[in-house]
Length: 141
Length: 145
Image (cartoon, rainbow over all chains, first blue to last red; front, top):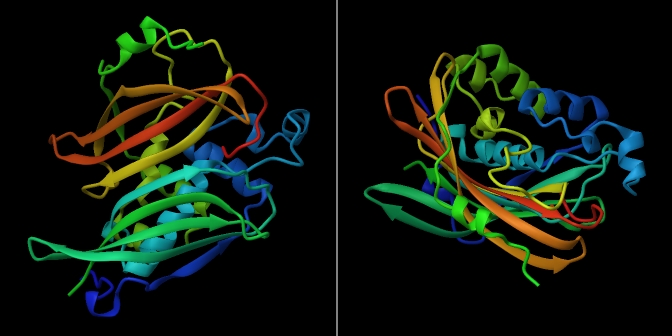
């Protein structure tokens, strides 16, 4: 039986358990294959450096997947995630930690189901928000 | 001066051909491993992580019209998830351009193309929807991808 995070524990201002990821070159190659995004800027260092970058950069969609993982873990099951919107505002260089964070901005009910609206984002090691977004998560009773 | 063409505007609202995929268990496990997600629920319940459906998207997107810029960035996605994807599901997807607009900024001149991707199961149940934003630009990469 699926055990979702109870609405009794979720309020405006509740923080979502953070998730830290440090993508490796190998991981970016794996994600390229798993997602079909073979843009060289994610795994070819010479290509990335010729484009003026320090090193290869993390796929935006991989950061989106990290945020989905954070929300799924927090909510208790991946099917609790109903909406996820992300905008990729900054680059994340391979090998540097990416911290996924979120906070509940509202809770509401709809036809006897309960939901939390959240702001979510990723931060690089300098605390800059490289991805910003929002999510809606189904809560348990 | 705007460089949005009539061809671009005519493409708005035109649905693509339907593409069909069968969800292979190894595709899910490779995606889970690539994300580094240690949750065993995917293996136990034979389901895919929420954004797995990216696997069925053309990356970069197939261009529906001539585009003057070859530099491209993923601007982001807005997902709605209705039903989980299971191993063995047959998924159909269609794409349509919903919005095109332009801006000038750090990347030079940018054209934003927003596309709606609809994902249905073979029994016509809607699985998910994604609004993806692709940025085509004149200058070098400086923002997120």
